[in-house]
Amino acid sequence: MLIPRFLMRHQITVEEYLGDSSKGPRYGPPVTVRCFVDEQTRGVRNPAGEQVTSTSTVFADPGTAAPPFSRVTLPSERVTKVIQTLTRDGGGLPTPDHVEIHLE
Image (cartoon, rainbow, N blue to C red; front, side, top):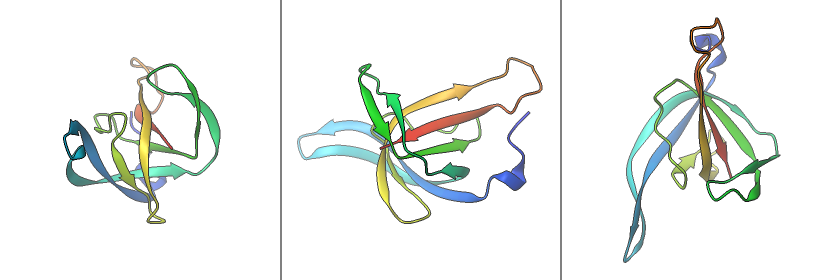
């Protein structure tokens, strides 16, 4: 089961982080993602295990690619980066499977 389509009210642009080069970070081509954006500040842990502040959380369909450090443009046109991406899978239970993306 997925998050109902009528709740996916927003669109973001994700540029997947590909690594660093001698000229700085490299990103993949921009991909438009249908999602729900919750602009709420909360504490989360980054991939290094440090406590950091997330200013927004995005709820998207399973399989959405947004590894840490990917660049995201929100509907407000604010550009931010991914802190972490979590897969939420109900394992067959009637819960909405989705990807939760925490942003700086």
